Length: 128
Image (cartoon, rainbow, N blue to C red):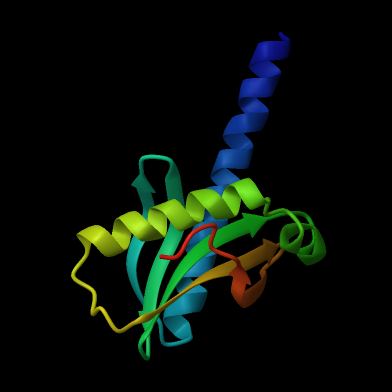
């Protein structure tokens, strides 16, 4: 019984995460960003969104929590390392100008439709 409950709770969290990513993507698009990738996976890393605007490539981590403050505090150094690795992989495989500025952004999401974009929130563990 416990396993079933944990699996159901995990499925709900996964769904909320996907919904938060969709909301973050819509927010970026409405803010003039061109979303180049969603859920970009690389060995040792994943970025929820990768977007481009005015010569800036944002590798984005999306966090959904019950409050914006909780979402803003939810990203660990290990998560930023995974986002960094995904960004590095994306740059190696995508057709993106070499002179773009790359940064790690956070988009925090909380119910019902609160969104906060924090440009440059993450610090790359190694240069991108």
